[in-house]
Image (tube, rainbow, N blue to C red; front, side):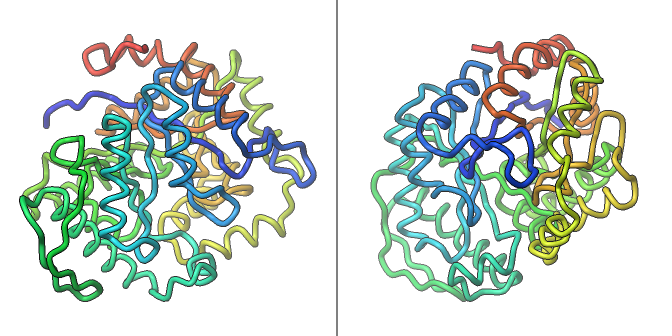
Length: 363
């Protein structure tokens, strides 16, 4: 396998930022001032891309990313494409317009949806299996529209197109990259066939190594064993000392009620990736491996595994994932502007020294 350059992404918390998930604790409200701070800090820290979330409490991702792309210089926006939400011809045109206007600063995050309640509330009438089938069809349509030399026809299970074409063409060749995070077989199949990066949520390095081997074998059936890269979606809580990092971690989940945790788990009960994260917390307790903490699973859905420790501990935890085959790291921490700066100051130099040939110099 060719050694891919390492890339690091950050996260824009469009539902607000906080140092504690406890009810009634101060939060930094979403909006232009906070978004400006986080995006500027991420750019200054040398992050290559910015994940922007989609969920009921979050601000709308396409408008937010377009606005913030215009207010920043280099960072790429990783923005969600969700099956059934936007007509694929319209979506194809949105992506290439964004791509041209920013000179290639967009990547597409494929999300089938963590919560059945949320997709139903949003008026999406497809169950999970159909959403994955629809996603596969829509990604095929996007790629066809972006690479065709003329109008295309398409007759599929969900969409029928006659003479479809889009302008402008993509800025990036052959088209923007696809990222996909998901723990189910359906997610793995789509990553194997279509994604450029499959993002895992937290797991043990051994668990990730086994999953990479399995997904790469599926990709090989599509002739894409070399085309698919792998990455981790993790939280990071780095402080100068381990004791300070542990205190910050515990503060995040202090006074989070069992009722809130139960409601959170019920909301994502149909998500394999969420179930896997919750199972790790159940089976291993607070620590699934050195410096890998499960405590955030009590307070947030999705990527609830956190890298916690001093700079050398945090770098070592990330290095173990690099060593088993991950090249892309989508990180987040609290507060998001401050943690991005800590990562750049303390953790990135250690990783750069260990992986000199694979790391771009921080801008």
